[in-house]
Image (cartoon, rainbow, N blue to C red; front, side):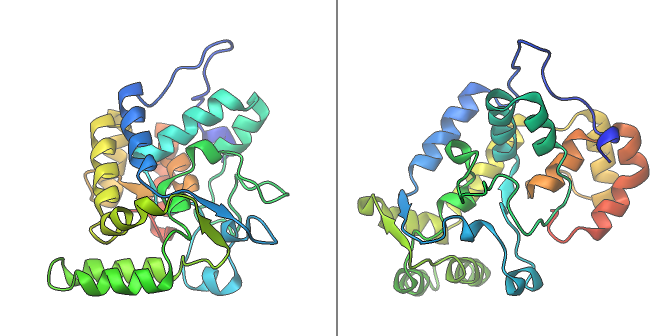
Length: 246
């Protein structure tokens, strides 16, 4: 499909940002509310690869990735990698790769400064904190929010992380169970409005949705970088096979 992708790389010597600086400032401020952790696992990066059980349970790497986060990562890729590496990253179209495309062979993250929320929140809360927070808000927030919070956070508890900013944990837990981060990320994405008119029409026709809020790296690459002609002819098939597109 690479020949079908439009060229969004900047002209030589220029780096035209996709994400406005003001929005990036707000995004970084949101990220700063998440307590930092250090990984003390013997095998770095194992949380960035899916086990067989996780694949069968429809888990995905780098998901959910919100629109504003996708644009932020694209800007980083275009600024910090050579043209060959940029093309390799931006040509990824697999929706659910078993291994994050930005994971190095040593277990490091090639886009660590701009990693999305889902990567930053991994291993922050303990099992006891997850259960306690869910119990504390029963009757205050919709039950399906609590169920979703429990499902996600129970699967992202990690015994190998050490919290570096424990003073942020309580407010972070509240934000997680109230889905505050996600709502702010969606709003930023709406303000950016990344889809052009042709792309928007193709999106609405196939999905019956007005906006794209979150997807995976591969899914966003297909939507944002495919030619209008390819979208008209093939996007429906890609969407129908998608498990995580929203």
